[in-house]
Image (cartoon, rainbow, N blue to C red; front, side, top):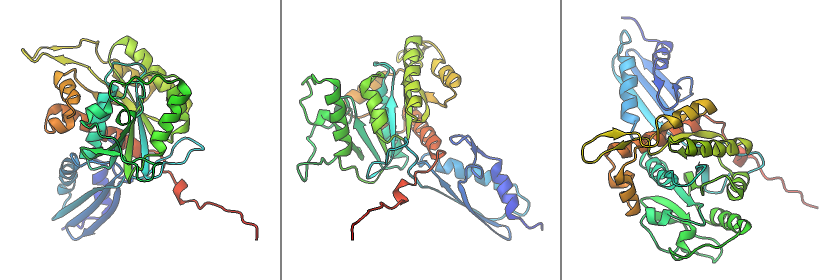
Length: 363
């Protein structure tokens, strides 16, 4: 019987291209250990992104690759996830208690950015990550309603705030501090200062990802936040129509200028399926988000349908990922979340927390 070599196992594993990393696991440095003893093979895989809904599929795909090796016997594959902190803009340090901040943005309003942000946060959590959500839209905070909570956050010391927890998501919003119908008649500097306070004075606890639901547009608020907040990556939400794509490109260019990597583009409301007859119609055009991603050389994370359930469930305080966890729409959100987190996992690691603070004392 031909003995199986470690190199044979490694070459077999290289034949599987991970759909989220878009490269093989050996090249992506996710294969941590290979043990071969006779015909017994044991492989340890460590992904840099949460993948609870993908783990069994991955194990089956790798097992299939290894089973065909001559002399292969018992095959054991361990798949775990370890999420680390990734680089942020130069001169900024990561937020205490938060490994990575992901900004969800759109060039214009009305494209479903907030709905996408809350469902992606919930999807990352379902996949196994510890997730927070900051509602950065001071003028029109919507996350309290979407998360189904209206309580005021607690302040243990009169200076900091405890995040409000809903569906296992730590969240903060100006909407928790004011009446729902109270208008915020503030000028730009007040808005950015309030947002910085909400971000930094909240006691985020051991988060893998903090999703920031940015206000629509590319004005002073968005630019200031992009320059002052340590962001690891951004997601651009658009619809297929030309006017939305035009504004989405501006948002993408803004992040490029402040050196925030764009993890990819999400095309929302890509297709409408009639609830009565099942007829499919692309109301806002076709493939615009994918074309834009190709033109700007950024990943296309996926498409989401225009579906009345998404609106009804989010308005009712139970977003689709928790309201219908086994539905195709929930799976789409989870696929997009895995893809975005996988793209982030390929970026450089942040080592700033390992450097000591230098203190000069007069002795």
